[in-house]
Length: 77
Image (cartoon, rainbow, N blue to C red; front, top):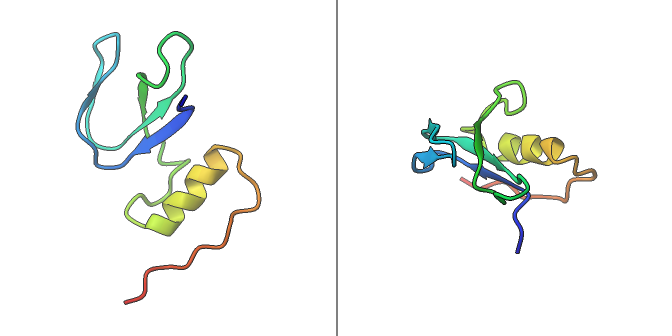
């Protein structure tokens, strides 16, 4: 399996192949020769509210250019 994009929310710190270290939430994007081993800081203009699961799913799908989101049922409290 080849991972093209992965969002790690409140994950363990990550060290990129060049030694740059990222803590907490970060975004992995496929890079030829490195697969998904490169991570980038999350742009708050792309991901509006990482503490809200539904908003994060919507933002991630938008970031990945996924159209026509499937229906999701929110958590019942």
